[in-house]
Image (cartoon, rainbow, N blue to C red; front, side, top):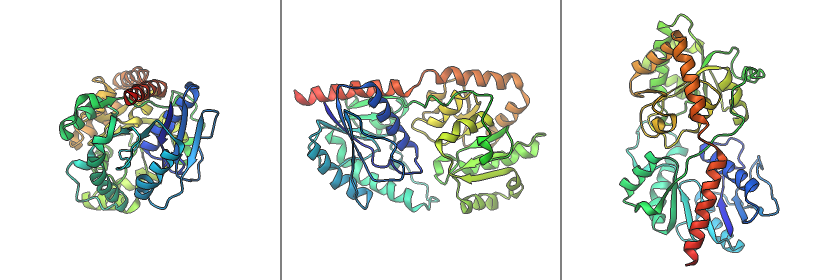
Length: 376
């Protein structure tokens, strides 16, 4: 097979969830599959994290905007390379493409009620683009991959798709996420001491940042230890608005907000953390949940969407809309050492069920199936 994989944004410096997923899939396929030929379509960037090998070719396409790159330049390049199928990995795909398509649809949040408080131009433009494009490409997709059983059923129900068009393939996590007694002082680039709470909050309403900060404020009022909170990737004006609205100015002296944290530093941060807060309102999978568990770091996560599926019924599952439940679990981890140790063990055991190698093996099997179907 000649397989095309869309990976437009993997060369950008500050990568995010979908970028990491396709990057790890590509790296695993490059290691394990020496039979088929791959063409990886990317946009130029500062971090050329994939290089050519004897059967994998990186095709750089320079185009000024995301829609133009995807709708015009990508299908043109795919035709020129003669790929047998094209895997589009980031929720959208070319509307007019004669090549057999596989789409990874991580979620359909863009079809769900929109939070009117979200003023991020980038997120709003992406939401509008997906609403325009996705309904027009579904009929052209030989398979639609998603990343959890929760999201698979959600997509089938809301988009009225036949189940045979869907495929569920779990994400994995990188092998360097593991327990260590020596976090190599790397965490000190972001926070001075070990034993902190860690939260990957941002301005996306689904991340539940406001309630989590209010829960942390109540934790500080009740805790004798008063652990600091490290928050990644949070804009200062957004943080200031939350503090002002909720009259929780006393949390400022306990919080570190260093901005973007590079992925290679995360294993050391998880290992230095006391616990990880993954209190989203909604996730289609939740790679950070797995990463923290794989490091043996207890996680407080939500009882909604995919998080019970990924974390298991034995994880700490709270109602993410209940500030009281989040606070109570922060305090329990701090005061109940047996509970804390059990949660470390729960995470380590659960994480062993997932890997990028398993993800890539299932992906390759799907490529073979779609290829043979297209030939008949």
